[in-house]
Amino acid sequence: MLKKVLRFLALVLVPFIGALLIRLLYLTNKKEFHSPDSITDEPIIFACWHGELLMLPYLYSHYRQTPHAKVLISSHFDGILISKTIRYFGLGTIAGSTNRNASRVLIQGIKSIKDGYDIGITPDGPKGPRHEVADGIVVMAQKTQAKIVLVEIKPTKYWQLNSWDKFTIPKPFGIIKYYSTDCIDVSGMDLEEARNLIKEGLLKHEK
Image (tube, rainbow, N blue to C red):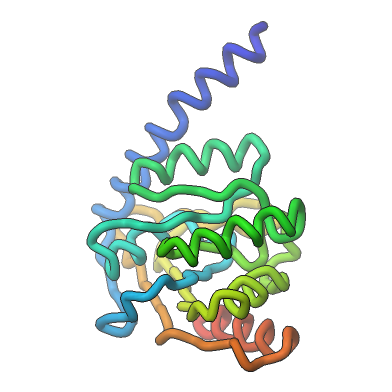
């Protein structure tokens, strides 16, 4: 019974507090956007490493004044918390991963793109290996002809968790540097070529 109560409280409180903290961290940092001024109005797949996803909503809002996106999130409890947190930023979710429940997730992702949604995805999520690109992002892009924007988020001051993805949390009073590419088209590539292109693009500013 106690476990159920704690779980309920976590589902109510953690997303609300988490969204407030994300906004606070964003507001207390300077921002630098090293990105194209604009991108296509067509549905886009936004990709970043799992360890850098915390501040991704603000890169998305840099391009889309009205959010119309779904993010692929783990169906585990921590994924549910993340899902509820990003709803405060107007973002929907698709539960699962391209490693687990792969077919269902890909079908939902493809349908969402065809329905006009942008998609947010962490190519190495939800459980790694870190900085390795799974096939799902390539398959989704090729099936829908959607372009991919690769995003790196590099705060100058940060905490880094001792987790598989070395999850990064910006500290206040630094600079959050956003790097994003022009739209990338992988429609004519084989899987390995496309995965390598995505990996190289997401590691361009890695220290």
